[in-house]
Every structure is written in C-alpha cells, then in structure tokens.
Length: 206
Image (tube, rainbow, N blue to C red; front, side, top):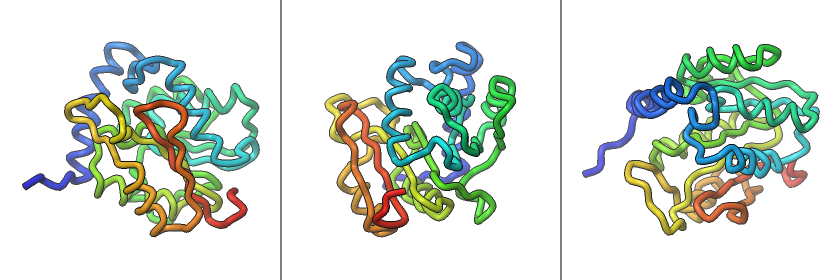
C-alpha cells in the first residue's frame, strides 16, 4: 500500500532536495532544479499566457528565489505581485534579489481567504507531490483567484521517467480541474515532458 503524502512530508522532501541546491548554486535556476534558464523562461512564458497579466495582481505559489517576478518585470509588468514559498530560505533570497516586490513564507493550503489575486500561478510545484496533494493545492489556488489559475506539472506522457518525481496524467488532471470549473485549457505543446493547465472563473477567460 502506497503511503499518502502529507503536507509535512512534502515540505520535508522539498527541504531535502532544494536547500542543498541553493547552497551549491546560489539563487540561480539550478537552485530550483531547472535544467536551463531557457527551459525555465519557456515555462514562465506559457504559464503567463493564462491571460492579460501586465496590470493584473499575481499570486506566485512556490515562488522559490523570485525568478518569475524578474521575468514579469522584464516583460513590462506593472501590476501587483506576491510570491509565497514554504521554505523560508527561498523567501529570504527572493527578498534580497527583488526588494521592490513582496514575498512571504506560507502554504496556500493553510491560507484560507488571506491571499487573493486575479491570477494564481505555480511553476514546478508538483515535482515531489502526489495526485491527492496536487488536487488539494490546485483547489486552494482556484479558491484564491478572481480570474484564473495557471500551473504546470511533469507529464506522465513523457518517455523518460525520473525516480522519485511525480508525473501527472494530463487527461486525469483536466478531469479533476473540471470539477472546479468548466473553463479549462490544457497545454502540452511546448515541452514533451511538461504540461500546463489554465482554469478560469468564467467564459471570458480572464
């Protein structure tokens, strides 16, 4: 029988994996275990195609060291941004690197109604998750948005499997997302091992 992954165990796995990378590589793309800065930027670009974000409010769940807000700023972002992460070491580095923006330590699953934004986004959130925890997290993200949610995940359709990493089935993920809203878009057109899903509050799509 497979043991259900608790939020506490998930945070422990995150600490064990990412903090040594942060120590070794500093606050670079390697600290959050992306293979290249190009791959990280491509994921960000697809994620932000969820809607017209330039003057919107954005909640960045699992912000790491703040790379997404740098990407936003480079593309003319003039809205309101909040980055949250469960690892205080990541938040500390994000604040040092992007002092003009707001970062907080926290878990979207424990936030209740305290965090809201037009768009709630998450990149690389589910690498060490499982299906149950992913569903709970996506539901919490959708509860916090006023327009839409965008998140990515490793795909079960990929040829290569990495031991210990969670690869979600895209169709099963869409099926769950449709229990939250009928307005769902699946993107599996930018990397063979990744997919991105957009969820919207209504047919206007943000």
